[in-house]
Length: 227
Ligand SMILES: C[S@@+](CC[C@H](N)C(=O)[O-])C[C@H]1O[C@@H](n2cnc3c(N)ncnc32)[C@H](O)[C@@H]1O
Image (cartoon, rainbow, N blue to C red; front, top):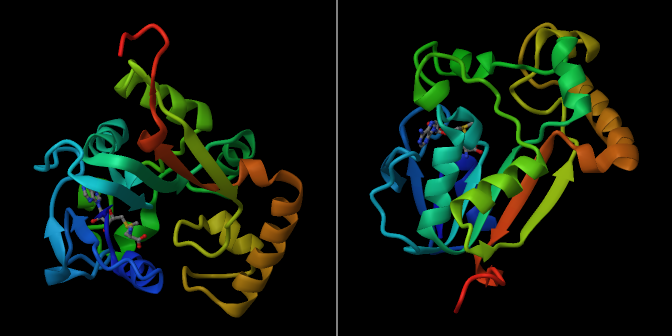
């Protein structure tokens, strides 16, 4: 498998799952957001020098929204994958749009650039904070249909509320959680857990984080395509 936008977190997850044949790629493997150095290849997700279908599975966690052209980067993941693309990203929803408009969720991601000392961690690894590109399910479906119009490709979605534990907290959300800075604290985690439990029990489908699995392995020719 190829792990795009790879960082320490991805290495820990692949180790825990016993996935030994993983290739890690990042635009800046030595940056504070990756910390993989020699363990990772250097590559821009928009233009991967990798053959079509070269990896069975291509996964990416929390990376597409850092790309200046997220659809192009998703296209590259789709092109390189033979069987599945697994992506974990921010989900767009009426609730998230409301949260953004009242300052409880970020429209641009400033914290990652602050963590990078002001010079990395933003869009395409630069010091410019990225727009937090949130996807809807419909948008993912349309995008995949556009990439591969001759085939019907099933997509699985899994959504979950996970607020209060990430770095992209706005000052409004921090104030709600009773905090002055961006460090995670026990009260933040407890408050975040309570909010998440409530939201997951009533509106899980709209969760701010969602994973989608593009099942190329189950793709079928459209009925109007001769096989
Ligand atoms: C929020 S971090 C996520 C790191 C890791 N996947 C994780 O979950 O901890 C986003 C990563 O995407 C990388 N990145 C940003 N733009 C990229 C691009 N155009 N191509 C490849 N990687 C990129 C950054 O260097 C950064 O390490």
